[in-house]
Image (tube, rainbow, N blue to C red; front, side, top):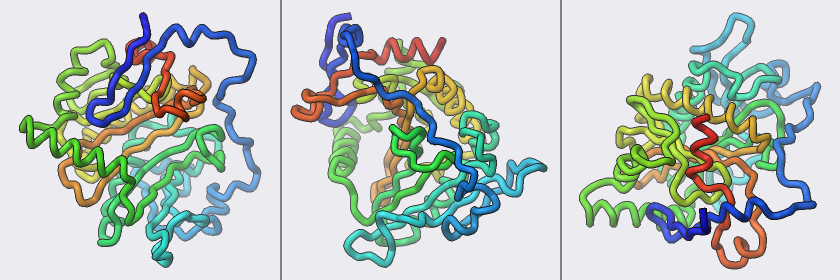
Length: 311
């Protein structure tokens, strides 16, 4: 396959898919999934959980007999935004996904992962009651190279009164597309990707595919087929489908030995978004071209990445 410049579905973001670039010689180590060392006095383990930050909520639907709890939501002890700081207003929370220090999210049951999604939804509803909040980001950093600072399985919720400009631009473009064409651009993406070689998995509720113009090597998206504005609108069967595919994807990423992030957004005052999760393995190294021009060079085509995930 020759190099090809591709554009994002809606924004002015461009990627050069350059498969031959992956054959370049390297004598510098690439990012690998180096798990953080196990701590004997982990702040997210049950004996310390109350000292690592104020407990905001506990979820126990999937608690096992040998577990003191299933999921805990904590106020971030070292927040970058807070409700008592008008210069950086917001809320930051930690979702401790299991009391088991050795478990990773992909080791958990589909039902537990679905309950984590339910916890995200509950906290999104709660945070949205603050009328100053305009933006909520739910994300996970897995591995030190992806930004994780604690080994124990956890994800985070970040909310602020500041809407990042690129998301404002995206929201405006999506609305402009709907005004012009009478339909959601991402509903159209689903129709297109269902028939493409980038499709990975699908069931009645969800579709999983590698996007046409991926910013990261092996980037993959999970998208509800139903047009949903945000995570609070997922029903039980959709959460289970979502969890099933997320578990499968993360187990495949483990075989790549790469750290990863996953994330999804909610723009509070845009009530007609299409929810989806981006999962971005961190094998990409952005160098002079990427930093200088804003063009991303990706040596892994999404078609090849989809083959890997399907395999």
